[in-house]
Length: 74
Image 1 (cartoon, helix red, strand yellow):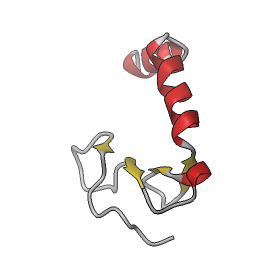
Image 2 (image 1 turned 90 degrees about the horizontal axis):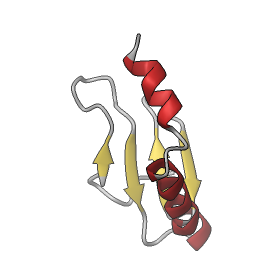
Image 3 (image 1 turned 180 degrees about the vertical axis):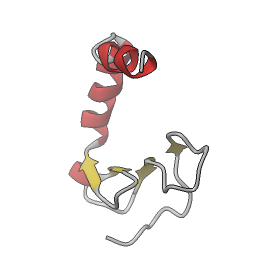
């Protein structure tokens, strides 16, 4: 899938040249695939804006906290 958004909305890490995970929103994509997360291995996940909003809400509510705590203690 070609990048239609030249600049990512967010880059996660960004402290190296490894091709850090990035977040894009493609207004020209079908509604159910507008939000795109890429990883540093060339893979991607596409979802609707509603699905992404749910992910963000769950993260804000603490659903992902146990993963950040495990990573921070390494």
